[in-house]
Length: 306
Ligand SMILES: [Zn+2]
Image 1 (spheres, rainbow, N blue to C red):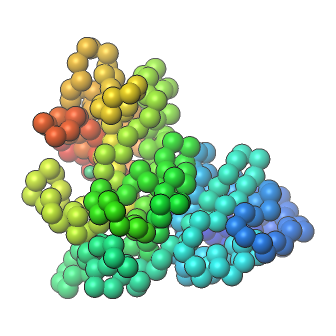
Image 2 (cartoon, rainbow, N blue to C red):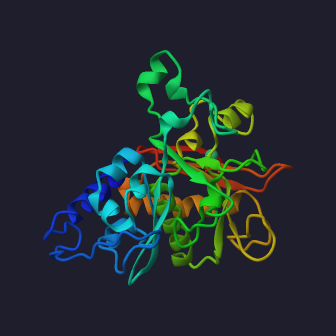
Image 3 (tube, rainbow, N blue to C red):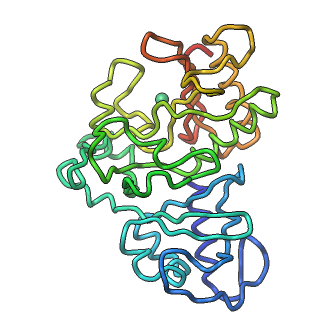
């Protein structure tokens, strides 16, 4: 959360003439542009939003936060802060997307539109409601924007709850530090000399109503981080088969390959303490291959076959 707030603060700063927190350079005469949906090039300040990996391609904004960032309105018009949508900006490092979310309050009786979300543990009465927080809002994912890149290797679609196949729009909670960490893990694996063409997200966001179906089996817990958009269950895919790759090259795909992936995540946390969180190693079952849970909960947690 801290990283997100900092980056938002940096964006706010860009709206003040003549001062730029991230680049340290004055920002004078930024062109006003009101046509939609693509902002003038280069859009100021994107560099500060690309994360530790430098590979983030999106920033998610709850409407009240978007309203506090005048530069968004300047570049994209009023709809950027009032209407959920994807707003594309550009600089020399490539395309970037501001995605304005639906506010949390748009969820009524556990749904937005016909998409079932359910109720978050933090909405329940009792002590848990004081301990946990509701997400700020929901990314509205349509058939038309589902392939929007959120980073170099990941798209919105990758993190969707795997149910309600025919229902659109779908709603998603996702946090940038998770995506940043996944990109860094991919980098780390390659740095370790391990072939890793992509990380497949087996399970990213899980709506509370979907998560509740699996509590007590498959490792799901009532207050799972997956409901808050900062956890993903992943494995490395090389080649055509959608299955964990033989990362340690011992001729077998097993828990040891997941341990290699977990080691890469461990090394990322050592280098980037702000991305500290959970790492859990899971064995293969008849339903899935070995995988690793990675999250950015803010404190260290370890479990499984480490
Ligand atoms: Zn998980």
